[in-house]
Image (cartoon, rainbow, N blue to C red; front, top):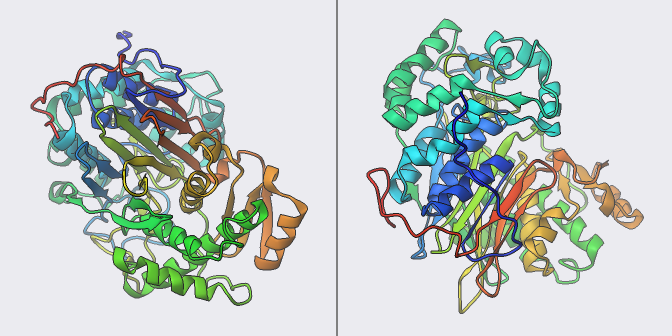
Length: 547
């Protein structure tokens, strides 16, 4: 029986002072705004949107995945919640074959998304957790119209989803992808969310839900056990890594996530001669591609030596070394070039009138994760084991191994003397996360574009193996010639290509109002709230505390 819609209507203002939410799906954006209207803060908005995305973007994220969060409180303190998952204890090269790392029950790491957003909500939210979950429960029970993009994603993964009865039943209709406009209802997921709202996140790791996950794994040859779930510890808050770019502090998440690559790329760009960067349009695109390619190669080599960690104070020196390595002839492909993943991640941003800011990236790793679902609980499992190398490596496949990711929730502040928020953003798209975030930041800081212009601008990306990808509107003859002389190959992508990732962002204007931007390459929307529409701050509840 349909329930009352707790989401409400999406405000349409271009700039406002009551808060903003930007996500990769309209219903998730509305869910976040509903929390601001109810007197919640940016954390309540972000967590509501996160739960909603777990319903509305099942190909990209969900309860079986992970999350990484950057949070800045109204008093100016910024922390990172590193919600990367861990491999089950029984994982090894002997127990998991190469093919099993990518697809099936043995590809799954311990899901961490539920624990991560629960910690965020409990420490910094204002509303009751059950209230924050209402929009997601409504969407799971009553359904939402499938988009054209989601139809395409189901078509891309149809053969894999057909291989597992529960994934086929949950996400296909009579074995075929849902058509655009068809309503996808997920009653099993709605029941799971209701139980979490009632029993709390601990049930996912030590209660009935944990038992049902472990039973499903045991029945299907998986390695994730009830002991793995019970031993999982929620992420602790840590400090972000940071640099200054054009005197603007930039803060992002450190390893094993991808924030370091964003900071290194920006630091290299800042040290380039001004006639090369930002320069003219062709100069700008060429430099972006060269620098991100160099940073990817550096990460590949550095991670194999010491896990890829560089202290914030050493980023500038490290960037100079990368810049020096770029001065010779075109590089060569990495000796073990990793295949570019499709990048089925999602990102959201939320901000409130009090100054709280959240950037949250969550993922199943690949499109539809491991392509297997828990039919009783209604969600897909991740396939993060595919990121763990089988050779000797700090991130090698083993019990307790930590997958690397490209997630990079990022915050940019203005220069002296104000040091106020300027831009918060993140992206989906595997390694395109790095190139997309760097391009948007440079577009705003170096070229003076608005965040919406920056997100919509044609993109460039260089793969680890040395192919430059460029969206067609930017593909001038002169730029193509320059890229062909520097890279091993060049590929022209369509305008607003899905391949180029998906950025969600919020920008602060001079008058302290905010503007949201959602990437037109996917299904995102950004919503704003006037101060008069935001509810009065809600008093702390047992599920949250005031910051």
